[in-house]
Image 1 (tube, rainbow, N blue to C red):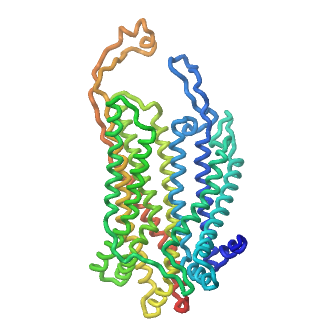
Image 2: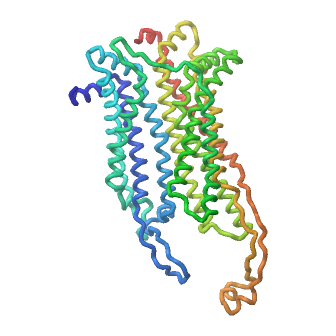
Image 3: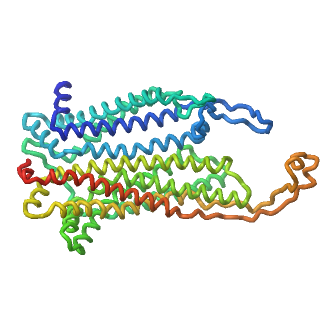
Length: 513
């Protein structure tokens, strides 16, 4: 098959196919913007350490003084900023996955027609992969153009010549190429992987589906992830007692591996939650809407794992951020009691956490977009069944309430599990801050007398600071806001998706092939 023919077949289709390509391109553009922004923060050069100029002993700092934001000036904080930007890739990639499923039955029938015309299964797979890859490439190129335009428009130094954003640097050429070209390649490979269970024949599409009920094995992954996080501190202490340095890769592997295990467990466990919720509804519900939702939940329990994956991942990070904020507040309270310090103002650390909270909020908004796409795709894919229900006398309101049950019933417990796991991950790493338990010298005179070595000894006394441990409070309010925001996002997406229900339940849809 010639490349021109492959491109023409990949871009052919109906308005649904056009919408799928456009939404996939939009997701790729958002992913490219997040990736390029993170690479820009990483590319900020760190100047050599300057000698101190304030008369104090010790070394100076190696801050990048051309920026007005302390999160960009200090080299040790840029990794957190880049991580917060990379966090946005999780819901964006989830949105891309949902967009790739839009109109999937009609696309499969179109691919089956290509098989009827003589195409081989490999050629059909290449057509589907080329569609997603080209859409991703268009999106990453558009995202790169937006990045360059924003780079120029946002380059606004203040009166001191400092920049609010790192618009004076660009990411490395290799990193930018990896983002712009790598994302479409990954999207194309993912499409080919998703088609591995689809056998396209000249007689239609045959899918291999799982009929066995989900098992609660994802709970083991969650426990293993929590144990991995809880083992970080003992492992570090083991190396410290032996006066050795742990391998540089050990801590990142433990943290990233534990987080991935817990996240996969929460997302995969949504299938078991959906199936169990469907069984409970089928057993105890009495209204038609709840019974319809129960049948859908037990027939396809993995739909919740697919649609809620990005939202649950954002909630895990959000709950972890709430736990870290609680630890900061406990440390500040400890410093207030013992007279210690964190090395920076309290507002600085809280502003840093505000940046993470902003990233979590944006991630949840993007994940809500993925939920909407998945809901609309489900309504369109089952329009014949819904039209048949309406034709037999089932009110559209009943179908709408069943969709609400189908969305909220697994979402509520899954959200609670995600928030609990995210908070417990942080508590496993950070212990309750403690300090004191030592003797300290206190000068009772003024600054002038205490600052003079000749008179300081006269006014200095030694006092014992008792050992103090401040247990961080559970951030119930922030966790509640995160959970309520997630459920509101689900409700809003269901409400918007129901706008497509009337069109999809017309009697004419009974003739849809």
